[in-house]
Amino acid sequence: MAYDEELAERIRDLLGPALPDVVQKKMFGGLAFLVGGHLAVAASGRGGLLSRVDPKDSDRLIDGELVVPMVMGGRERSGWLHVATELVATDEVLEQWIQRSLRFVRTLPPK
Image 1 (cartoon, one colour):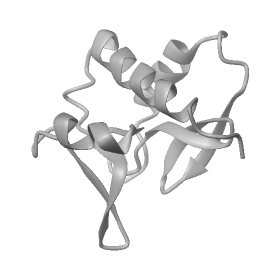
Image 2 (cartoon, one colour):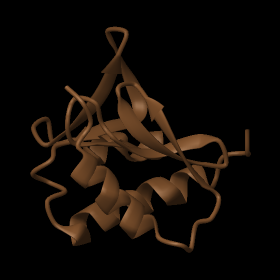
Image 3 (tube, helix red, strand yellow):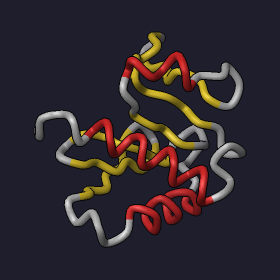
Image 4 (cartoon, one colour):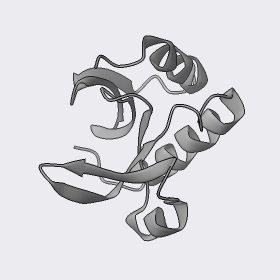
């Protein structure tokens, strides 16, 4: 499945001109948005949003249905969440996920 181009456009719009350091890159079958060399969010190649969050917040955010851990290589990745398309259907909710991810990746040293 190709990534959702409409979702990618919405992410782009919500990131806006305030973040000139955002780099877009095709990764994992999706379109990733990187800040300081770190993936913050992505329009996932399997649909929905990939969101990077503080690992200590992961358990609180996971609901087992619309928000699940990202699995890569058969392993769950701590701090990486897959958010279902229907959950980020409004810009208000998508913005919350984007901001949560940006807050976390800004704490990481630049690559």
